[in-house]
Amino acid sequence: MIYVVRYCGEGDASTTAALRQAIEVLDRYLVSIDEPVGRELIVIYRNRLPGAVTLEVGYPVDQSVAEQATGEIAARPAPSGPMVATTTGLGFASVLAAERRLTGPLVKANRNRTFTWQGFKGSDFRPWRGHPSSPLFAPLRRDTALVASQSAKQPLEPAMVVLTSTIEAPSIQTQ
Image (cartoon, rainbow, N blue to C red; front, side):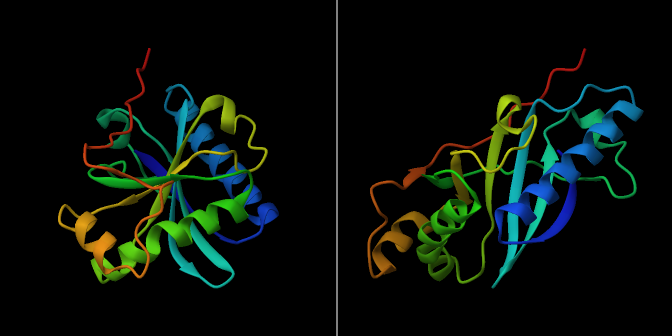
């Protein structure tokens, strides 16, 4: 995937501005190399601090497109592997609440901070109108599912689903 990094506050206005700007930068880049704009958006939430979040905003693309990434545009593999997921409501506050429910047991079990991410189809982010309801994913070490559910003060809630199959972002077919 190709992506750009944005730093923003936790409010809807801040995240909306950051995401709109990132989408514009990515679209402009793809057009400049004669590629179609992204049809799926991946947003990775990292470095959660009180009042702030780092966003890695990107599109899954073919390897040949990722290899051309330069400057502000970076390339990395899309999130994949075993995941645990829960759904979110509308707005970024719902994403933050889901993140707390999802990562609490995982951070304890993994003994480190984890990241979370969401994927959005074109109709959900063109134009970006604020966070739609969408599954929120967190990576799960292969040996963590049982440890996380047993070591947490509360078991994983019913809304959380442990996915043992690999989650792969679909590649975009270029024309």
